[in-house]
Length: 141
Image 1 (cartoon, one colour):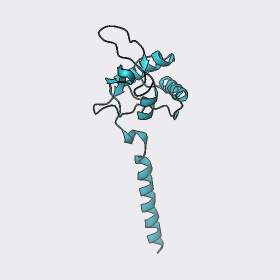
Image 2 (tube, one colour):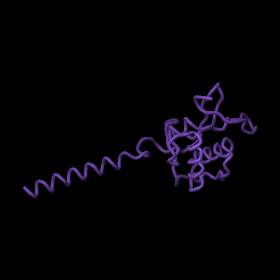
Image 3 (cartoon, helix red, strand yellow):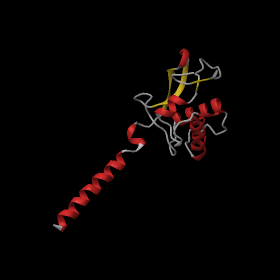
């Protein structure tokens, strides 16, 4: 009887551990790896982090790529927070993103995902060699 109880507890413990591991935010969407242009509020085009499959992606501390650089540029231009736009998602980028999330009154976890993407301002895409011309949210003023 004791062996059966121990076996059952072991199975339940393993199952609970698997559920906890698979429930993380990274499991919910692929990593953003590049930038893309997408239509935003009032027909403007903004430059946002994307994955090869679309805009439903995430960024977090430790990532280093073009998508991080695009996020950093939006933080600097649209929120006036001074960070390097080097494509490295380090502690300063995380702290800046937490400040953006605080200002937008959303979950302040320091990660970029769909909630942050939709709430924050992004740099409006410039055509040709011009400088970016402003900031817009994707779906609202």
